[in-house]
Length: 441
Ligand SMILES: O=C(O)Cc1cc(O)ccc1O
Ligand SMILES: [Fe+2]
Image 1 (tube, rainbow, N blue to C red):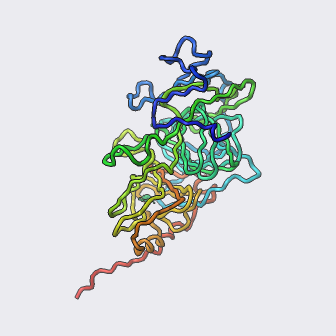
Image 2 (image 1 turned 90 degrees about the horizontal axis):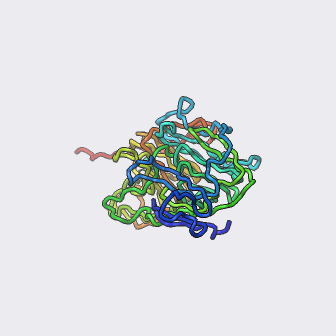
Image 3 (image 1 turned 135 degrees about the vertical axis):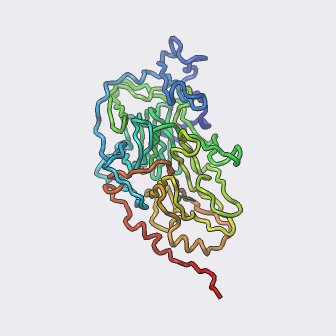
């Protein structure tokens, strides 16, 4: 595909309209007796019908055939590394964990985006619409005539290596490293890999949807600005007598159905339930310009709220390039223990909290109340560095999935991936007692 294949509509949570053919959206109503050009009308609901207006999400799709035209679903092979039940096979530990970069598939095997998703950690259960999962994906081949949808929740996808050329029912999106996208529950998509190599992270939430955080005293602008979110525009294919497979993740297991036409046959759509992407370079960074280290919530891009105003299900937080100007301040992250779980990943460059070992394509987990903070090298250097204004982290991007839930680590995450750094705890072990109380006379 070429760059002009992708045209986007700007805005977050808008009620969009999109027509690949002029006048293919019905005028003034959703379900006329006959739709323009004999298209079929189909509603895709992203919230309960009666959800409050502020949270009500749905789109109307006008398509060549309704999605229901397919053979019955039957179980498909589900890798044991794709997990949604965080039971006794998983391990729970309060220890600090860090992973070296996850391996890409070898040239000997062909792994597409869906086949390459491996679950690292999670909590809860999609059957009860409660909890979340953290996945790693690595892939080296296109999905070809296979389309996927997730019945279990929404995906927030963070590419780290290789762009994802994603065909969705709502149109195509090209999502490159340092961009992210959200593909909500139920939306069919198929991923091609322009670079034939891809690695990244997925945050899957089993309930609710991602929102922009409230800005409080920041005011009405800043952080991720709504106009920088991009939603695809209707782009359809008219493909008959071509075998397509539809794969559904349903309560953690994969199912497949066959049809002899493309699922990407939506000629027009309107509504506020649609996938989107966002370029992290557009994030308007806000921070202290006087003194002290501000909590990382100041870098929240998106939040999945819980039913309580007091905590989110999960926040997606980034650590973008920015000016550090604080005076008389230990500038890197502080030592801390958090009532939330912190999974971190690195997209590019390095992270100011760690001097080495935290690498692009790897990760770390500091669970509920697990102590962590700057490693000994960072602590020593930052305690004596000159505090001049500093442009931090050019070409660097790290991120955090911060969740209210207590995460269990899957067998793949703790063992099979082979990436756990057993020596991680040692990064703090040389922090000595330097206490120097006043000498009594
Ligand atoms: O642990 C981490 O590296 C993430 C983090 C960064 C920061 O600046 C403050 C708190 C925090 O948890
Ligand atoms: Fe932390």
